[in-house]
Length: 467
Image: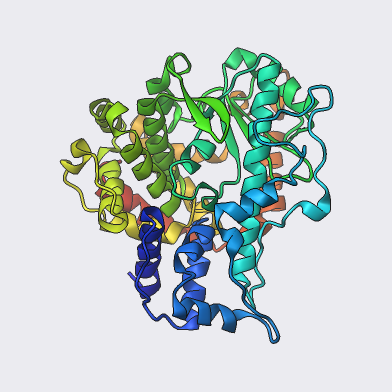
């Protein structure tokens, strides 16, 4: 590992245990590299909060500002400052106070809505970026809790997964930012949830998606950080690779438990179900293009917090059936060795080496969202699909690039009556990709092929696919 990676892990460990780290005396360029890595893993507020008292960090931040700039103490990097910002959020109410049901949510004044914390590449202002992320998270959580209360008034009770539940595991919850909030709902209630969210002022990301057919629907609130993903099931039921991940969650909606977030009681998955989902969600991203440190800390913190309520034997059995038991053991070993969170005994007993997984995690950022890694997913998913179906190499890759009309009918409803237009749907998918790929950077086919081959070998090393 590079020096910056080693100290990033030390800072994450210190933040999770509210400890003060020793100053490694990194130079300004090393601090810049470390903080960029923290931002890639969506851990900038937590890492900067842990590092702020270190003299070498303070000196590096001063040098990173343009001439005439200055660095002040980041009080709002703590939850306290963010909560003050949340007081001016969308409906002007406390988290436990629902918006007026007839009017939905009020718009957020532009002047009170913090930016996403984008960085100037030449003079990155890390403190301002961290403050913006924490403030956004405070507003997002406030609006999310109000949304749950508004849905409840309409007789709708979603099950919250990840998001707010994972944030609550951290010593300072608002330092763990998240982009979206995930809700699991009964499939037959999707049209009712869709209508309620539109009534409450949210906008469907894909207006053409059919709530009765699509397994996943996403919504955002204009001029707000609120972003909601509705799930009828937790994994894509049309995917050859992921559809079997849904089987362990049969009846999960009947096993939900209450959880308190601020002053609002939510419904969430039972601890065994929720941890299993976090693990399989991490594995899904591992098979696709990778995942980052925040997912590792989520899984390990959840396991520690709810250890007495979790049936680890069942989780080991489910993971073994999906060939991810050694992968999961390696994830826990990273948590134990690097973050100081002991691995659950059943996984600690599984023989595995976490070194290769740690290298992949550090390289991936949060969910492997870099164009060459994203493209390499066609290779890894194709290899797993071929393994699962016993096909010769290539069939899974073709299917991932060119899904069937049935698989795309939720996104393109017109395919149901006119399946002969499937090539047009494929073209629309490609056009959508080309339109949005700018945020990921330029592609390099050679790099994608190299990463794909390396990651296939990684899957083999953890027994996910055969040698």
